[in-house]
Structure formats: structure tokens, C-alpha cells
Amino acid sequence: MSSPPTFDDLFRVNFAELLRWRRDVRAFRSDPLSEDVLGRLLAQAARAPSVGNSQPSRFVIVRSAERRRALLAHVEAEQVAAGVEYDAERRSAYSRLKLHGLAECPVVIAVFCDPDPSEGAGLGRKTMPEALVYSTVCAIHTMWLAARAEGIGLGWVSILQPATVTELLDVPQHWHFIGLLCLGYPKYEDDLPLLHRKGWQAQLTVEAMVIER
Amino acid sequence: MSSPPTFDDLFRVNFAELLRWRRDVRAFRSDPLSEDVLGRLLAQAARAPSVGNSQPSRFVIVRSAERRRALLAHVEAEQVAAGVEYDAERRSAYSRLKLHGLAECPVVIAVFCDPDPSEGAGLGRKTMPEALVYSTVCAIHTMWLAARAEGIGLGWVSILQPATVTELLDVPQHWHFIGLLCLGYPKYEDDLPLLHRKGWQAQLTVEAMVIER
Image (cartoon, rainbow over the protein chains, first blue to last red):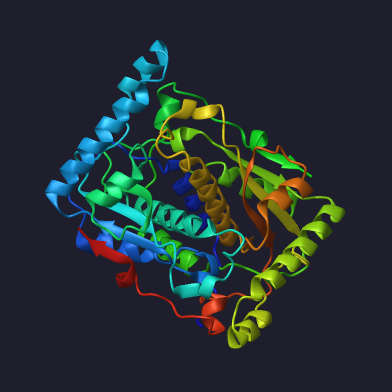
């Protein structure tokens, strides 16, 4: 074991900025991500916490142009279907939102959770098996922050049918789909969520999210 | 909008160290956390990504000593019950693991997800409503990293029955319980997961978690 790091005020200020400027990125420049950078982001994601250290996350890098086209077509169809239920005013706002950068981002990764990983020997997931899935979410969030620290944007696409994505990517049927990620250099940066800036809704204060017992 | 930050190599090195030294902390010193620090951690958690910016996380700070005792008794009972199914050798190793610091940590927070938040207007969660829960997991992970940056440890307890915790804490019945968190200054620091150091299992390489399609 090496000696524990201490983090200073400057690091904490920068870390707070990282959180403040992390966005769900949906508009990407065409510059490629190097394999080096991609490998580094995956390695950092692999350090994320996992229940009983079960390490259940599985990252599928989508290299095939044909598979990317099929994913894009699926997400666009689901996006239209999801808009139908809004009233006229919301639907008009919805149709103007850019919800993903799947068509142009240089890297697409689908993230799954192995629901029965051999690591961890079941520890901590008897009463809450869903903690496995939560572990994979932590891995995605780790990659998100690590990406932003390198000036790279990540967008998490969830307007899709998990079963369709699982089939399109030909991964083990028992894997649990968690999220489809777009990665690349962002077209612009912002310290406000797009949905806030576009008037979709407001930001809650932290007080609205905390109670005491 | 202020101008976007750029993160330098030193920040990235420190951020990688933060990931490497973040642990699931189960042994706490008795020093209290100041309300300032706690407020700061909650405010950072509130900046976590959420699907359609729905901000569904609800943090319940457990102040009542009686409620804390009841939570501890519940978790200890579930911990014993979860050990019964292991074979003799695993059970012996299991009984020696310290799985939580609920008895001694200065702050306990139960985290829930509001499954029907008004913010976000349903965006992005029609096909994957579970994305709401994933948002709350991102908030917990944000708090975890922000805590570590202040030298504070967090332990996520999942050996419990969500319905029991919901009842013990008298929160709205429809809230979805996600995790019980212990916070405080750690007794020691480590760059290896406890379960790895104690020989419970090994660490996977990132290559074991990545495939291409």
C-alpha cells in the first residue's frame, strides 16, 4: 500500500467545477477519441464501487457501422413514440429538444450488468439484488466524470427498448442492459443542464431534496 | 454562463487518485461531521445527473438515536441471515468481515428515489422508468467522491429489507429505497478494497469487462 493522498482546497474547487460543468452531452464534434483515451476511461470505470466487489459491469464498444445505424434507427423511432403522449404545447417543446448525439458521436458504448457475476460470492446482494445494477450505474457515472476531466462529453441515452439493444448487439441474453453512451468532444460547454436552459423545467434546491428523521 | 473550466494533468492525476482511494468505509472514528460539511456534500449530490433532469433523489438524515438503534438491529439481523447459505469455509470468512459502521459512524443517511417526481415531465423515462433509480445512484456516487475529497469516508449498506427501512423512517410509502449510507472520518485508509485485502476475492482486469461488437 502506498501512502494515502490528501486532497487540497484547489482540488476540491476543481472537483466542484467538474460536477458543475458535467453535462449530458448531445452535440458532438467529429474529432475521434484516441484508443488511449478510451482505454483510460474504461480503466477508470472499472475502479467504480461494486456491491461485495462483484464488478458486474460489461462494456460493449460498438465498432460496427451497421450496428450503429440500427441503434440510431431504433432510438429515433422510440423518441417519436415517447412524444405522442404529451399535450400540444409540451410536444412542440419536446420535438425541438436534441436528445442524443448517436448520429455523430465518435464512440458508442452499451453498458450491461452481469446479473450473476462470479466475483464477490454474493456478498451484500441477498436482500437487495438490485445493488448489482447500481454498481454498474456507478461505473457509468465514474466514466462520465473521468471523461469530463479530459474535456470529453458523455451522453446517456435511455429512450430505447433494452431487449432490442441486447439483440442488436448480440450479447449474452441474461445480461441486464443499463445504458447506451455517446462519447466524444462536445460542440459547446455549459454549466446549466440543457433542459433547464431550454425552459423544460427548473432546478430544485437541495433543501427540497432533504428531510430529517 | 461563466467560462468553461479546463482541467489540467495535475487535476486528472488527483482525480485518478480519488477513484483509487475511494473505499466502502466501514470503520469510523468518532469525530463528528460538521453541519457545514454535511450540507456541502448534499449540495454536491444534488448536482448529479438525473434522467430528464427529474432530480428524484430524497435524502433522509437520521438524527433520532432511537431510529438509528432500530436500523442497526435490523441490519445486524439481516447480516446473520445472509450468512446462513454459505458453506463452512465461506461462512467463517464472512463472519470475520466488518460489513458496516452503522454503530459508530457520526452520520447516517437513507437515500430514496421519488418514483413520480414532477420535475422533468417524464422525459427519457417512458421506455426505461428505472432510469429514475439510476439517477439516485449517481447522486449517491457523487456524494461518495465528494466526501473522499474532504477526507470523509462513506459506506453503502445494502444488507437490509427496503420495506423495513422505509417503515422505520416513516417516509412516504411510495418512495423507492436505494441505499443506507454511513458517513464519517475513516479509521484507516487503503488503496485496495477490503474484500480484496481480506482474500474474499480478486480484482478483475478491465479487459475482462470489455467486448467489441
